Amino acid sequence: MLRRERGQVTAEYVGVLLLVAVIVSALVVSGPARPIADEAARAVCQIAGECSGGGAATSVDPQAVQRAAGDLQGLVARDPDPTVVAAFFKGLDPDVADALAHERPELVGNLDGAPIPLRYAANAEAIDREIARLQADGVGDDDPRLRKLRELDDPNRHFLLFDPAGDGRAAEVFGDLTTARHVAVVVPGMNNELDNFTGGDAERVQHQASQFDPDQVATVQWLGYGTPEGATALGTGEPGAEALPQFVEGIRAQRSERLHWTVIGHSYGSLVTGMAESSQGLDVDETVLVGSPGVGVDHASDLGDGNVWVGLAKWDLVGYSEWHGPNPHDRAFGATRFHTGDISGHSSYFNEGSESLRNIGLITAGYLDEVNVNDGLF
Image 1 (cartoon, one colour):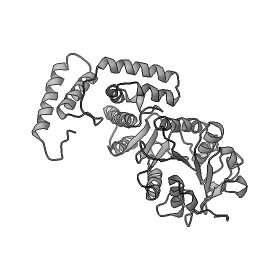
Image 2 (cartoon, helix red, strand yellow):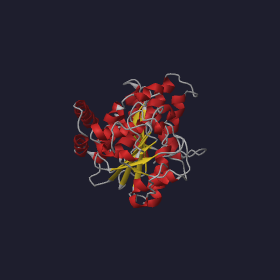
Image 3 (cartoon, rainbow, N blue to C red):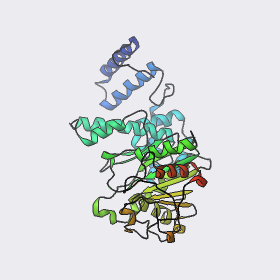
C-alpha cells in the first residue's frame, strides 16, 4: 500500500500528489466535493496498485455500486434475518461489495449478517468520516468524543459496530473472528458509552483464553445498547436483550462451522444477557455472570440449555443486591460457581493475573474441566 514514512517523501508520493491536484482542478467546476474526493481517491488507488480494502485496484462500475446500495437499502427496510443479509452479499461481485462498504459505510458497518471484513472496513471509514464531520463543525481538540474517535481510528483495531449517535455504540473484536473456534462476547454494565469505550475487558479475556488455545479464540467487547446511569439501572434491560441475539446471529451467518460460544455479562450486562437468553432466543454454550444484580429469572435452567457459570467477588455489593431477581451465586439458583480468588469489589473480575480472569479464560477456551469451581461462599 502507498505510504509516506514520517520525514520521508518519495518520488512516487510526489507524483501521486501532483496527479491528485490535477484531477481536483479539472473536476472542481463539475461537481460537489464528495465526487471530486472519490475520483482523487480512485486515482491514488490506481497509482499505488492497492485500494483501502487491501486488494488490487480494480475498476468498479459506479452504477453497479449504486444499484447494490439501493437493493441493500430495500433489504434493510424489511428488517431481514442475518442469514438473508449474508445471502445478499454472497450474490454481490466482491469488488462491488468492497466499494459499497467504503462508499456507504452507514449501510454496511452495523449490518448483522454482512461479511466481517467488510464491516471492519466500513466502520473504519465511518470513524474517519465522523472525525472529519466534528472537525468541520469546529469541535476542539479537547472534546472528549473527538479524542476518543482519534483513539479508535487505528488500523490495528477492528469494529463490528460503530454508531456515534447519542451516547454511541461500539463493538470491538480481538483475535481472528473469521477463523476462531471459540467466540466470546463481553457485555458491560452501567455507565458505559462511546466516550469512555474501551475493549479492555474483552482484550484481557482474549489474552487469557489464547494461552489455553492459541489462535483459536476471538473475543468481542459489545457496547450495543444504551447502558443505564444511576437509578435507571433498575430498568428491565430490554433494548440490549433484543439487540444481543441479532448481533450473535450476524456472526453466525458468516461462519458455517459449529463454534463454541460464550457470553460474559458483567453487572447490568448480566441482566441483558439473562433476558436475551430467557426471552429473546439467544442460544450459547456458556453463560458467564459476574457481579450480577440478578438476571430476571429464578433458576439457571431458565437461561437455556447451555452451561451457566457465576463468579462473585468479596465485597461486591451489587452482586448481593438482588435488584433483578435472586442472586445467581446462591446455590438454589443452580449455576456452577467458580472461584474468583483474592479480588474484591465490583470492577475486579477481569483483573490481569486474577483467578477470576483465569477461570473465565478457561471457560471461553472450552477447558471446562479445569475451571476452579467452589461449593463455598467464595
